[in-house]
Length: 422
Image (cartoon, rainbow, N blue to C red; front, side, top):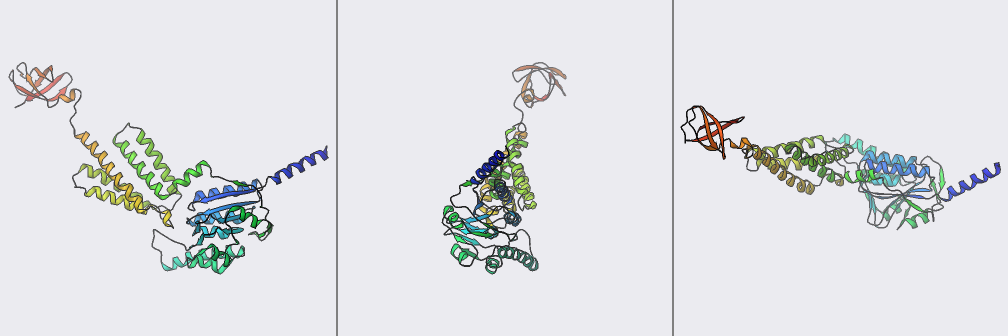
């Protein structure tokens, strides 16, 4: 019995080992908290299934330093070897992507790719020379520690930070920033098979990745949705449309649909902004913009208030996210393309509301106020008048002769208050 159990365990172990594979993670976006969560889940999943390696296909213009450091920490602590491949051709791993590439057990690039340009950038605030030097030295020390541990060219890696140098795949290979230039994933895995890599903790391991199945590890639905709305341009569109929908709901209570759509859009945008370096002064500018739109509809400013509102919204959009790279800021074209229509629609909606409040009621008994009728009896002060096609009991402050024209001043129950029309 014991022998049978041991044999069964051996078979299960062999079957489990045979199914070991390479887990593929595709990062084709800016580096932000969702990227960090995605890569972290992939590494944990690879460790749980005892995969042979984690392959990160990296295509990024850069991103947030905090998220980059968190990803680097996960890579260097990974119990499974991590291979980073910048590809396919035409891709790049710039700024934060450079640190992630250098943190890998095996760093590789496809032909026609580039990396580097990792000088730290601070936006949205004035930084003196001392602080700039501190930030630069901190980033330089970080890349030196990574490159040294991975056995790569420390001096050249540091120049990618201090001097913001960029490197083609051939330059990176020649200067020992990467181990191999591979045109595709199969050729990369064939090259890596049998290679001994030094892990970040000093231990060594031999890669067995050739002819192993490459299993894609996809983002969850939540991560896919959040990754899309992490684009500052999408965030601004959601915020502007959501604010306009709530604006319409407040002006037309009971419509319901604008309120629901607006609430969802605003909540999503605020959630995404909470994960990005956000300027709350930009919120104030956007709020001021809607106030100016309302004032434009109420007062005759000949477009001055409305133009001021559009300018406030554009400025608010441009300042909304203090991203370290252009891809993590709202583009001027997006700000203009959204702000001008939103301003026009907001002014139009408010104009309709103001006109509706000013218009006289045209239905019900209230519609009779101001109507002209004829006294059918002498009003002294009570009598009867014919108005609005009906005969009414009427009261007048002064005596009115029979046949005289009267104007309705008010309605009190089933009686009208009238005055001489002339």
